[in-house]
Length: 349
Image (cartoon, rainbow, N blue to C red; front, side, top):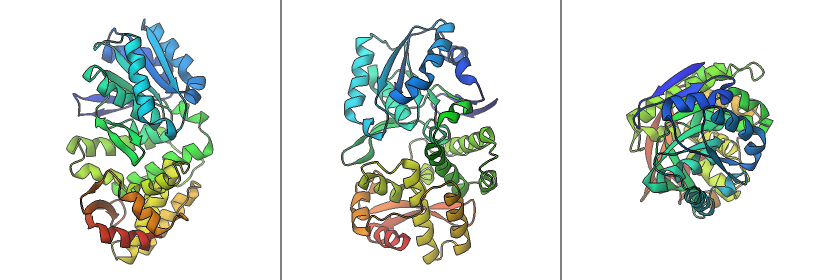
């Protein structure tokens, strides 16, 4: 078992180990003590893991209630958010009670946002069931929902009290969903640690616990320095500006990981043309992306992509801060005027 301490929001641990879902009651009780718990999950994860989780919670003498929503990004909206709040109220949860987010990024984002808003904030615990959520969205306190205008446009910075990551839960992911998470892992290799490329080199023999722990450590270090994304934390958005535009144009039929993979490859290609990184590095990245059956290109035209990214939450007036690669394992923030963003987008295509 690996434990990564995250020193924000009062501090909390990310606990990583096989079989931890069956010890969740003990782990949660060690942090929260006695209270009522509301498990928030989607219908797909509910069928796989809710019974095991609730058995463990009840063995620790927790009283639990459960809210289940339809799986998929389309559910990460204001309607589901309000439904969760109404559910918590109807079940008379009070400020001493807590929310358990069981699932991937959608469940974690919307359950965390609901926890931040209900009674002006109650505690919550993240139990990620996807690789993408384990290495990224379950850590760092970003919660939120999508609006019609774009992704993650409403939300709050709200840290969990505990993250329980059981790699055994990843066994039920289909190939595409697992590879989606690998896109975020690759991102960490570009922005902070080129050794992650070596950790991913053999897809058939991954040390998944070590990969998750290293990614969480990198995110921890960034978030501790800049919790509210006023500066350095924006580096975690590598590939996301162009990627979110792809997601939006596809009406979220292109998965987040696939979109980020496209976005990473696009900004890499643009930076080669600008002399910010080498063609050899860009080719290495594209080869690794393809090794995990992720896309590197999109058929959406530049004009439509540009229009979509204008509503990106990272836009500030007439500029957007992009994350651009340099040498392997290093990236930097680059404040680009909108005309230059459009030029780089075209170059990346």
